[in-house]
Image 1 (cartoon, rainbow over the protein chains, first blue to last red):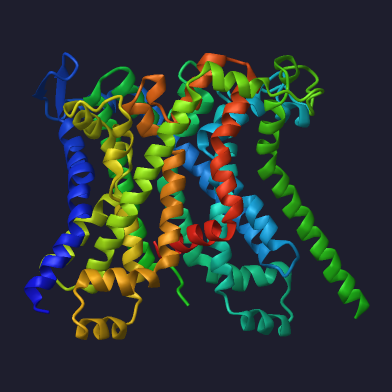
Image 2: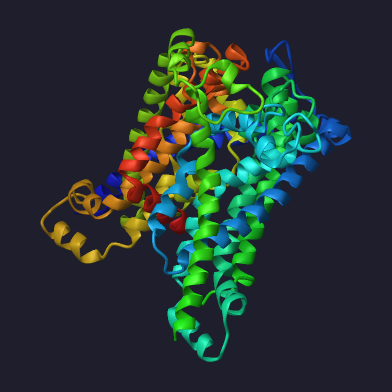
Amino acid sequence: MNSKSRYAWAYLMIAPTLIGTLVFWSWPAVYSIYLGFLKSENFGLVSHWVGLANYERLFKDAEFWQNLRNTMFYVVLFVPATIVLSTLFAVLLNAKIRGRSIYRVIYFLPQVTMAAAAAMVWVIIFAQDYGLLNSVLGTHIAWISDKRFAMYALVMVGVWGSIGFNMLLILAGLQGIPRPLYEAAEIDGAAGFRKFRSITLPLLTPTLFFTSIVLVIGATQIFDSIYLIIGKTNVALPAVRSLVYAYYQNSFIYYDQNYGAAIVNILLLINLILTGIQFLLQKKWVVYD
Amino acid sequence: MSSAVSAKHRSNLIIHLILIAGAVVMVLPFLWMVLTSLKTTTEATQIPIAILPAEPSLRGYMDALKQSPFLHYYANTLMAAFMKTTFPVIFSAMAAFAFARIRFPGRGLCFFLIISVMMIPNPVFYTPQYLMMSKLGLVNTVTALWITSLVSPFATFLLRQFFLGISKELEEAAVLDGCNPFQIFIHIMLPLVKSALVAVVIIQLLWSWNELQWPLIINSSPEKLTLSAGLATLVSMFGTDYPVLMAGAFMAVIPMLVLFFIFQRRFIEGVAFSASKG
């Protein structure tokens, strides 16, 4: 077969994905950046170039900074909690115990559950008067409408929904650690936590690093649980509103697409920086065996 | 020796206790969903809380089905999930094969253009996609639910990793037999990456079944919503009629739960597998 016809086949086979990606994903991304420099009137019928005006407004907007802080606060609570609990359960499941596959299935359940359905049941569990959580704890906390607690409620739901998947990733990482290392350590008299600290943890860093970065990127985009659990009329909304929620609110409730685009473009910048850090650190910091 | 055995026994017991505690927390919301869906409205909001329904009733299910466009949600979700699974899997497999196994001018650039969108958070795409749908007159249609997702850069990236790992010999024999690249792809390569294809099908299916934000943005008529977006509106329709809400939630998750229980190994391995390659 000559190379011309091989090329033709190659172009034909990549064409749907390439064209689809360029039209429906790459172009919109470029257009979103462009939208951030415009101001439209009459529901988008007329637009004119305003330069950095949307961003100037954004940086002067106390609500934007609050939303950014909320997003970061969520990341800071959610990611370490998920990593610690996922690692704990992965280490326990890595022990030679019975029923491992049953535990794996149960822990994975939240992963196949629609966020909307899960959110609805959590709302009922969090209810102040007749909620399961307050009954079990013997408290009377307004988990989702008290601004001191709403964020923790969201973190709880987030962690519940993420452990199964991340535990599996960490478990795969654990299973990649050679057994003889542990046996050698046992001969040297190391046990329990000591083994975990000096063998498991260092050799698990690549996995933990990869898992954390993916979690951070995902967590900066939190929207579903705020929309579903907190809701737009909740007094606690300002205390948990994320960048993506603010984007949604400005673009599709207030119909200010340009201001919304400016918000989401800041999120894009944050994510690109995170991806860059991931790329650089992956080369330098991680201990590959 | 016996003390070593009993120490081992004890530590296993502790491990099980912690794992069971975790498992209870994982399952509890499902259990609560089902129990609440079978209660009466008063039972669902009584103090102190009633754990079991005194007389389990299906009233919640009947009301959810009769008083909301639930069957529309179902049909729309099925349609969107079907389109967003079938096409991306076919297109991605083709593209991934070409990127991995054929050398052609512009290969690096085309691949970069495709995978570069993976770094971009989804909400960045939504407003321009909305404006595009609006130009095409597709806002508030079932088509809009899936038309922007007929391709998947992630699946392309993932499957390419698998195609890269296949040895060259099989392919060379086929070339000698006069097969063109497409025949090699269909007859030789596809069967070899079957498990990766299954993983991609599962990921696409789960993701499109559960997706919330895009359906919420693009469609607003109740009969054009998906289950995810529809459930969010049930709250405003039924307020604190918790049995109805929970019946709706349970009916929405049941298809994926059933698939998960049938193909649990495939699900778990597929998802973990793809993440480790991704």
